[in-house]
Image (tube, rainbow, N blue to C red):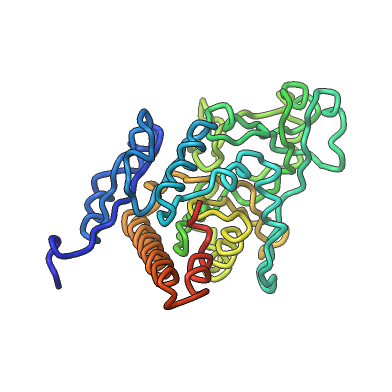
Length: 343
């Protein structure tokens, strides 16, 4: 094997907010990638991106028109680099209605396991709250905008009309489905899929619908603490009793969502409907999630980076060959074969 000085090295630039950078770019990931010939390079958001290349790949989780313009300028200067992912595709996940519409676009077999989403409606004004438009209590109230801010994570479990009066539109009302206090989080990084089991909200009995308070506020479902303040009741049940969904099923879901969304780095949250044991409901999709919470994330992300930079290299070689006339038409086909990694 050639030593590091003889191997082709790849540069993956990352443009992340400070908090995301701290959680994601851990030394263990940097070292793992370096061993594979991949150097993770911080992008300075205060300088023009096009001046900081070249990069074989850029990963990012920054927003705004100025950043979009920087990405466009970078792609114009380095057309063969991969940008993960397109701002237009990411934008779809900022709306809790459009994000889940992707589930209805999935073209995968539904045999022993079936999938879908809970019933949900959008509420734009307080007057509309008077009618649930076919939904039944309890419901989950979520902000319509899902941009990763603290505000976008503030949700409520609403038991009855008393709880509706506390809500502030615009928001999404999603019918709560009992799922034995367990949520499955699937992490997707290109072709690589890992999923884990996390604690969630407990089942809601008919008796709880009469709760005089009317609602219960919380943030991220999968980050629920073990007990309510004051130790009133447990938030979840024993995870050991809940079997994981079949790997093949989750991988098919991941591939389908990846195609429908045009994204590489995301996760989706799935619950199992206790009324139909083999029916799974997607309740949320997030862009560039907290991968470091996933066991062995360093290996998964390094493999993903390797896939991307090698594919970018193949595209580059195909373009060069096409330009020389030795592989007419082949370059375009290779370039488009995984257009999801291109900006």
